[in-house]
Image (tube, rainbow, N blue to C red):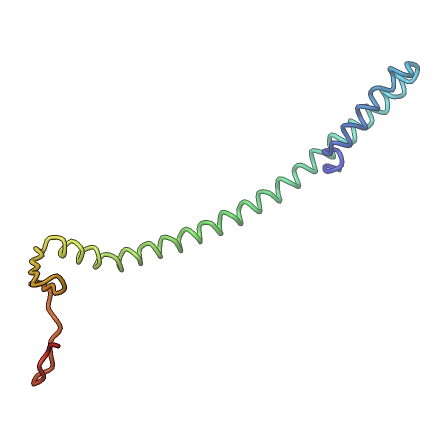
Length: 129
């Protein structure tokens, strides 16, 4: 009944129902009685329907809240895990930015960095071209 009385078609029916006395004024008494009877039945039915719908809505809201709290705790765990993983990277970036970079350019194609360790050659084998 809540869905039926809450529809736009019910509004149209009651609008037409309320216009009947304009066309047939002698029907105003019986129509007033019928409209009062509809109100006496419809109002309590609507209140019960709203209470049932609100109860279902409250239950869904509780379930949604529980799921969102669980998702939030998972996200917090992931952020903490990422912070621990990136802490070493941030410290290394800071150390690298503070270290002076001495680069010696011998030619246009060869660049030697003094601070970075170069590739080591195997003992006994010469390295080079």
